Length: 609
Image (tube, rainbow, N blue to C red; front, side, top):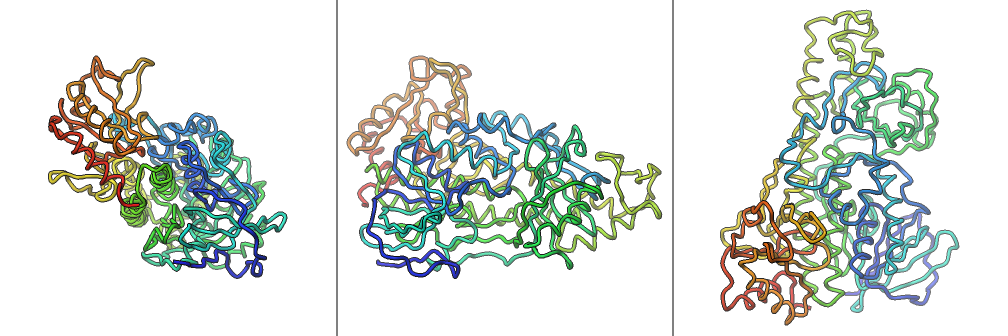
């Protein structure tokens, strides 16, 4: 196939001047958002050279997501990123507050805390990590800086991709330095398009998006204002504003409460985003402080939809992150799914380039990740329906007007009161009327939000039913769920379990990153011997870990074989990304090496170049 893929739209310059190929790289990563940075970082850690290009002169330039979920933080823990970002996280007492209000400084209709909706015993037994409330714009520079540790990763900012040309030898990319105008070409064996929701690469490849059309239109308004005193000691990381003149989502973007994002529902009369200063009255209304000193930094329109690309691979080009899927922000899985896409693809690209897997392994990227994206997209949409119970819908302005009118006559229609004030008192602190059905609706709706705010199963309990894994007839299908049920079945993330080594306590999650790992009880050491023999014959780097008093790791509580669901004589094979590839409860027989040769062949697509 010899497909020209121009990746710039009508604003692109004329046809670039032909340039000689200046370099060859195993992997070209397009886009330095969370997906591209995570992919380049993981490739760097594994030792596969890559080039990361980004058309912007810097990363973290616009605030967006603020929630990094548990699975992402588990990866950040492995990569050494978690401890670097914790000091800059947004203060979140009680696990994080979430509020519904007439304005930030005004009347609150109710709030939830993450501690109140979280099952702490299940959380602590399931993971060594904890989610983080921190702006994406703060994390991206940390990830970019981390790339400097790995000499195999080259980063070029202010560099755009003008076109991709696929051929038998790989993909030839035409690049332009946006600072100097210099045009160069290079050949990459594989390309990962992490170029965002509007992905020029996806458009040029002609890959459609499947899913419902946009349900609502918004304007994201970034602004600065000192609101530390306004939020007080119990700040909400997210406040949903129900105000007939300014309804939307208000998110703090830094721990000092100086940088903010207001995602405003579109309504008649909103200014043109190009005239960003004209949004100041809208912001003052949402904050509830008429004379607030502020600066509007940026304004941009966007439409909420839930779509997934119909194909994630075209030849040697892969769609990753937002280029492959778009979710509503309800649930907070857009950014987190993107990072997990990258984590899934990175080890497979590395294995192919290192020579211990066949190209067919790369086909399992879509087979595994696309169903997860489809569920996350659908669940985000369901979360929007759940939020509708609080009045937060595209008709929110009409609802907010009725809500405001429901307050005591003459009370100012929900004008400012202290955050966290008694919801049964008006702004003059007199009791509000007993019969307030809309206020009651909002309160009841808030009580319904717990499951979508704490979906531990969706976060770390997802599993792959097909792909780089070997299932037995008795293995159950992995049905997506919000509730978490630990499992060591093929396709699932291997359970977190604390073991002891020479250097102290270690989570099983810490064992997985570079190569496949076979774990077994000390009595099942023959499986470990067979795994080393099979891997050695196939040229696959593989680590074995025997668990027991005389093994590499010890199990003081004695429950690992039960958690791993392999018994004392079985074994568990885990992929570099921490997902189970195969398991058995049977003791190792004379054909154990043959069995494992078959498993490795199927998992790694060996013999299928």
